Image (cartoon, rainbow, N blue to C red; front, top):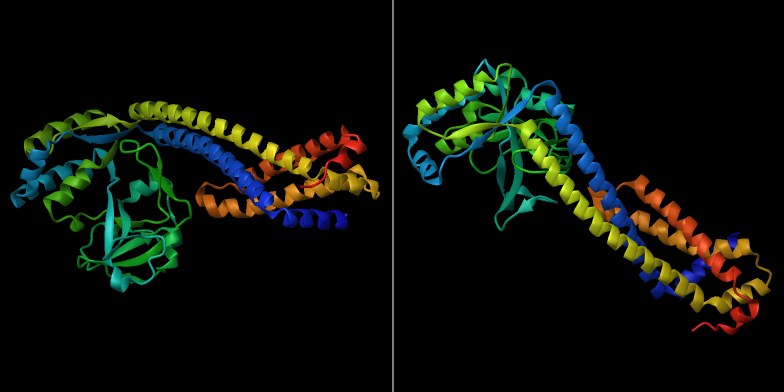
Length: 396
């Protein structure tokens, strides 16, 4: 058996150009399979998450209809702040509703003093890290908690401090650790108090169709002391999500908000919105599956043809091998071993190419199926060929 494996390695090396082409084709095959499975899982996960979020209480999202001209009037006039604060209190400090924001933006750091920025988004002068405001309701609805350190306590949502506690995504631990003080542009300082579980995410149905991964994000406590300008208040109000025991509370909010003469908005049920999102996601998934399946079939045929051409090109060598005493089992090990080695290399490379999209169990299962197929194909081809025909086929 060891001799056959040695022959496999020699075959791959002697015909390394063909081997590299075959390796690239098998990598493409595994990449497509992984992406198809990831798309199916993503659609199912979104469906499950929407169902979970709506099974206890219906959630309403705020839809902002304020015109650009009206927004500019509010933003340019600090006298609008008291009225915006009143509207803020109507939504976030109302005993009749439970609200949480899904507002996100970026914290900017000086690139010159930041050091290693790794995978983070950078400009010529700055390093940007996305952040999200969160309160206890956010953590509760999306089942998010820190893997290390601690979460926010009630005082973090109320106190006015020069140092703001933050939670960081797991990927940011390459740069920060619990207890570190961050000093970005803008004057505020932040202290890391906890690290989120890897893969933590949330879904913003009103804004997108996809999960938002928190691994590369910072979470700030939802503290009204952090909002000082009309833009701050407007942004956090327009990204509100609410649950209510009595839907009439929403009508009351709309009625009283009209008295503030600030933003124009309405509330939309996330359950209602999720039906359209699910339909859009399903249509997109069907299109992805159709295109991916066509590419998968084409790639599989290409790999099969390349492999059979490789066998055909070196059929003389296999004939000599048989005359030297090799059994069908020996040939199966020699030929199948070549493809198995290529698949092992492919399985090592695919996770580095796809990263979060890769699924090792899917790659291994697909590889096992391919191994079976490409063990049978050469034996069928060689088993039907007379020895005289094999010895007529000189390697080129």
